[in-house]
Amino acid sequence: MSDTRAAGLGQSALPAALVPPEPEVDFSVVITCYYEERSIDEFYKRLSATLESMHRSYEILFVNDGSTDGTFERLRAIYEADPHVSAAIDLFRNTGQGNATTPGIMLARGRALVIIDSDLQLDPEELPRLVTERDAGADIVTGYRRERQDSLRRRLPSLLANAIMRHVSHTRLRDFGCTFKIYDGALVRGFEFGPFKPWRPVPVIAAAGRIAEVPVTHHERRYGESGWTFRKLFAYNMENLVNLSERVFQYVGVICLVLALLFMIRIASAFVVDTALVEVTPGLVLNVVIVSLLLTTAILSAIGEFVIRNFIMLQRKPAFLVRTILHRRPV
Picture 1 (tube, one colour):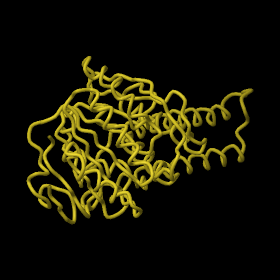
Picture 2 (cartoon, rainbow, N blue to C red):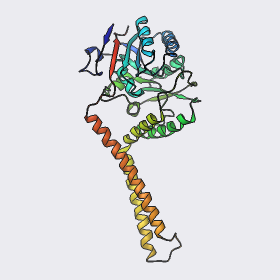
Picture 3 (cartoon, rainbow, N blue to C red):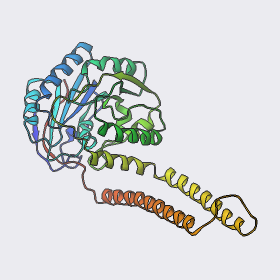
């Protein structure tokens, strides 16, 4: 057992144990926790029982995403009691699910990586159904929530996010937001995720050759509140929109040029022939100018987002900072 304190999680900041060797177990289950003090024990017992029933080698890695309640104390107790729990990581502050998943992925030594929420909205007992598809040859197996039990305020931004991510990944997945997935370990490690390149599922999904979808049960949240605020959902959508930047700007550019050409033709025609089309008036011209300005502002905002993200990346600001790591080799 080790208890490591560090400023960040990376190859230069922590021991060589954080650079995983060849896979040692069939499944690495990476779980992020955010104020799950009341749910984590039940979730762990159900997950552990499910993994044992599968008779496959496995490890469990927990990451406390900045919770200030008793979540990490519960994770420490679970880690000390169960040798299958190979890591319990405590972050200094809440960084968001994608960032918090990254240190778990960096330590994972499974041939396949399982991602699932610990808030009891998903049933860990349904994992064998996803594993069946994994054994059949799928690079990624993703659950989709048949009857999602979230509020309309949560579902509406997700509809937009799913639409954007389908375009980014060139797939037809129904539910990107369902955090019940199995990824091929080699596929994930090929991206070399770390503190300066945090975990993002969309590029991994886009790189997969074979993807399977499995319907899963979704429950109302019993404890606490989701860490996905409207602000975080909006930021996540913006990030995925930036990933679409090249195509978006090309499409918008072509559309603007076509519309501008048509408008110029319409104006020119008014001086040549008497037409029954809508009369070109100062009001029409003003409306066109206003729409053009709004469209230009939207495009400049997207470009600004892209520039800012690249600037932050150049500053080498880590996406997460680790307070404590409890880590050992998987059994």
